[in-house]
Length: 167
Image 1: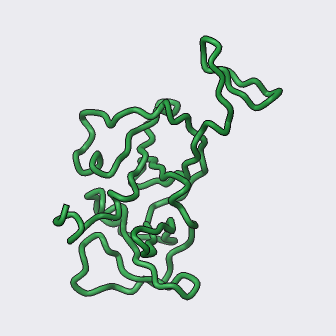
Image 2: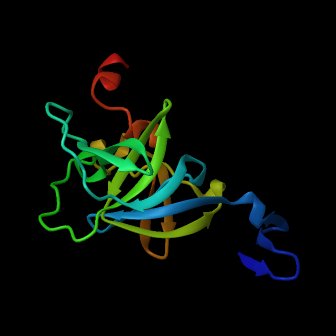
């Protein structure tokens, strides 16, 4: 694959041409050292999550509620969704703003990275050895320079509690 800078095309092989418009954008996040990505059309914003109020008797995944510009947002811990322990010390909690079924959510992550443009045709199925809890939240993977980028299924990540039992 080589880039043709004259008109923003990428030569993929045997004469097949793709433009950058054919690629999808994915903001990346990191949790427990693993890079993950979300489809950009699902991401509303990225923000520092401060002053999270605990919700008694809420699902384990619910870190609490927070106020984002006057709107109540449910904070969901991606670490807990993936079956990982919470970090002991957190200087700054980053969150990715999402909507699901008309409700606002802040997906708490360890770090927020850059936005990548990826070829949708390069998306591969989840590896057979991937943890089943992680695989259930993934749309597939991209291989990037020796690293595995997991593409999150936002609907699956935000479907928990009664919603999962009803399915």
